[in-house]
Length: 254
Image 1 (cartoon, rainbow, N blue to C red):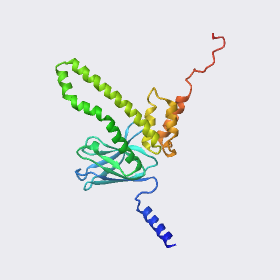
Image 2: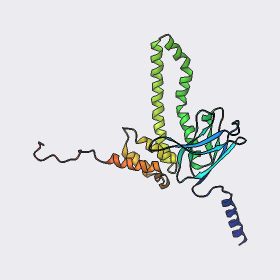
Image 3: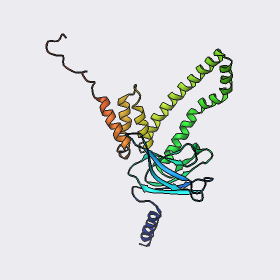
Image 4: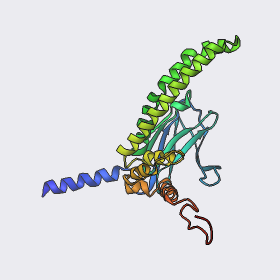
């Protein structure tokens, strides 16, 4: 009996430690080096007009900031920091989100602490590895290419372009394979439904395979706005083309 009471007490204590309730979020941020009073704006994009929407604004105090609110499903948002170029992309979702802003290199800023943000970091790191060969080639041959352009050395220019295009093709094929593998192996990740949504924009897309991937997702992911859009698009792509199966008009030649 004492063990049961102790277990229940520990459970209550654990639950009470959480700062957020259902459909709530807290963004706890660090902005080391950013001056006091600088503004941080939480932004998103209107899905219809594509206009940038400002959702919340806070001030940096002693290198820190906090944003609270409610959210019903995961979605991409950004933080825009006054006086810094660029922004910090992350997935706004229920939970305690930690964001570290890198003042000197904003693209190295990172959000963590919730499932989808941790997944986004892992996925991004993996895709960066895929792009590394192309990036290394660019850095290695930048000076050579510039010199060849100045001297109009077409042989060198064409040789470098041919080699770079080959690397780009390999990178694209590898990326496509990794996208597919990720969506298949991470049914609860918001990233997976975004990957599937992007697949549908490919004119050579295999709708049957994409539908199978989508059907394998967790219901919580299927029911997001991107999930609903994917389901609608798949349904439309499966419809027969207008006139494809139409009966010939009376009196028309067969």
